[in-house]
Amino acid sequence: MKIVQQSHAGTLESGDVLIRIQPIDSPEIEIELESVVGKQFGDAIHRLVHDILNKLNIYGVRVIVEDKGALDCIIRARVQAALIRATGTQLMSVNWSAL
Image 1 (tube, one colour):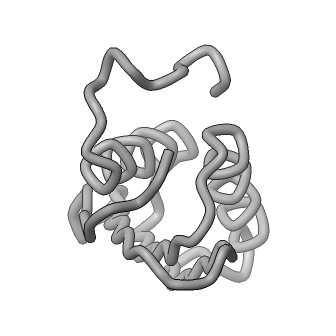
Image 2 (cartoon, rainbow, N blue to C red; image 1 turned 180 degrees about the vertical axis):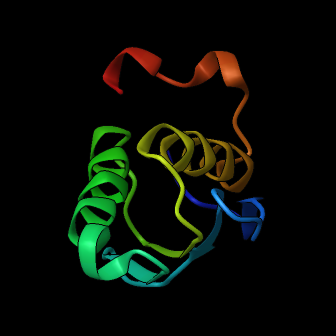
């Protein structure tokens, strides 16, 4: 999947996460993390986001994560929603079994 536009998903409410997706010109994955629980779970959040991007074969992207203490399942859902919006794909065309 290729990132074609900026997108976002989530909120800045307590227990949620705001995910912003931006296309970049290089074939890299850039993840910026700001989290209220970053000292305890920052590495795990970073790995989770990177894992989702790798499984969906997405490169050339900047992901900005503003976490307010969200659970892994919430982070995963917000990243997936933002990616669907950023790629302009339909829900049915995503390989959900890869995740």
